[in-house]
Length: 159
Image 1 (cartoon, rainbow, N blue to C red):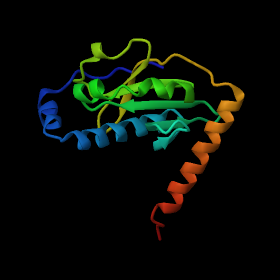
Image 2: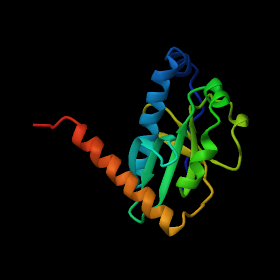
Image 3: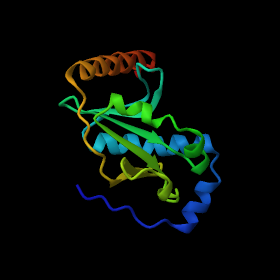
């Protein structure tokens, strides 16, 4: 799949710099979630792993492949939060998700890269496939299903 992300628009980037870091994280998470849906993944935000870590966005496809995206809203967010290696044992593919202005040279080239905004996202670098073993896949899939069900139960019921 070929994804091309347009060059940053200076007017739009000035507006995005006005966003506080939590707001930027929410916007990037929204874009990643939309991409996951487009790729046929069922997304789950704030997915708690068995090791106590919390993945920003996890996605599960029809065949059981698990993808995790770690959203980085700015350089400081990446530099102070180095927990991402703890996620690798719980997914088949791992991505960093950043905005178009993020200094990409900071990110390890061994991991996938998603460039996102609040409207969508594109894969800039494909993630390496690291297939989970069967026992781990079953445990992670059950955990994903239980957390998704719990979130669905806490969501407001639409008339």
